[in-house]
Amino acid sequence: TQLLEQSPQFLSIQEGENLTVYCNSSSVFSSLQWYRQEPGEGPVLLVTVVTGGEVKKLKRLTFQFGDARKDSSLHITAAQPGDTGLYLCAGSSGTYKYIFGTGTRLKVLA
Amino acid sequence: SQTIHQWPATLVQPVGSPLSLECTVEGTSNPNLYWYRQAAGRGLQLLFYSVGIGQISSEVPQNLSASRPQDRQFILSSKKLLLSDSGFYLCARSEGGWQDGYTFGSGTRLTVV
Image (cartoon, rainbow over all chains, first blue to last red):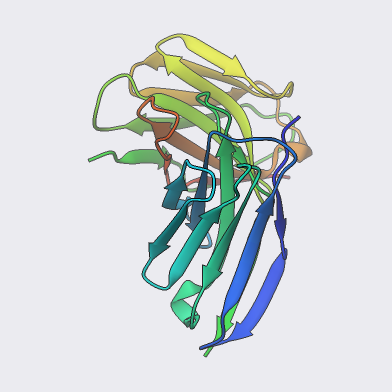
């Protein structure tokens, strides 16, 4: 059974701080995605990474796919209250299905 | 537009009652459709997925079933709800490529009492 463990589970930081969220598995994934979810809404796709070692940037967010394609990280620079939400990673082994991680709940205080 | 419509947004049902949640999608034809359940503030558990009309794959044995009577309609059902069926149910679509992301609906919050 493929599992994606995210850490930390909860994170509360002050506006302007930097943070990193991790997504780890013992399985290899063909691609990995990151989503952000607001309360009472469905997750919204942020990025897809497909190549081992790949780094993608989305404004203040930097995503990295591990060289072995078993893990990923999300780094946020100078966090803002608008970054508050539940961050989810999701991996696919090349099928129609994505396995979702356990989630990291981020709260950025003004 | 790859819009997904889910209803109702919230639902409170007694134990033992039936359930029907509907998801309809707009946009390209023959999308892959998915039902996920989310425990409070946590990750998503895949329940069912469908790659075409009448085709349903079940991921977790449980009290629920799914059907796809039309290309852009996906229904989640139960004959008798259990307390453990409470949760946030999300419908999602993808366009077939495994590198494509999901587009999610806005979800249904189900509380079984």
